[in-house]
Length: 315
Ligand code: MN
Image (cartoon, rainbow, N blue to C red):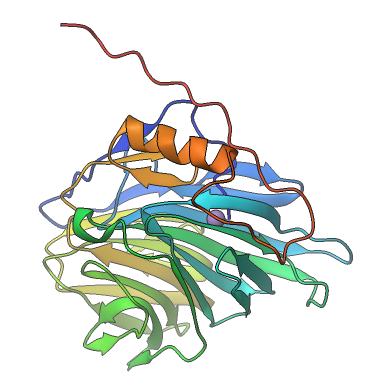
């Protein structure tokens, strides 16, 4: 997906990892893309990063009988990985490497943008008429952010079975269960299911900061009922996370990672470090350089929005 409403000026995003366990609720900010409801959960003014996770949109649920509720024309990315994860429905990815990935529930579409790639994501013509999913970005660390672009699809992700539920490990590792997906810094992304009436204890890495985003059903944490599509920031220092499944099936996304330690500059679909890099990437996209064409997509590509640099105070 494309960042649909970018700020005109690039936004510096730094982590502010909570040194101790905490529980901060950040309700998703609602936007709408042609009838497809989208909640923006990262970045937010109060929380820009969770480990290397720098972007999270939750969309749907939506039922439809015609058309393409998801139709994001070709657009460029640099300096990040896109993680596309569906709870319901289908998504068709095509990119400028000529790769195609048709994804459904429990399938990971992982695109490593590195120094530059373009892709399109759309609802395929044959579909279930329902759509519910997540779009995430992982910021790449300085040493690897200019890596070669790549696209991988994973159809058989490992599942950590636990008393009271399970967790599909999408990225990184959880409780010793490791995702095969390529990652560039220590992190976890997992789709957690809790059985109703059961307590589920997720094993965490105490060196990571974490967040939990309830997606379906009812969950309690610390005796408190959790709201759907709200990002609960948990801080660092937790060795485990006990959640209670109230009404089911209850599902939540667990995000975490080592505090990123680098300030990134985000604008539109770019993760960079300097304004010059963003200007260069924008000019390359507008001039048809660097990123290549998404030949499989029928229709015009997205134009870059106007870029306004924030005035910098003089000496
Ligand atoms: Mn995209």
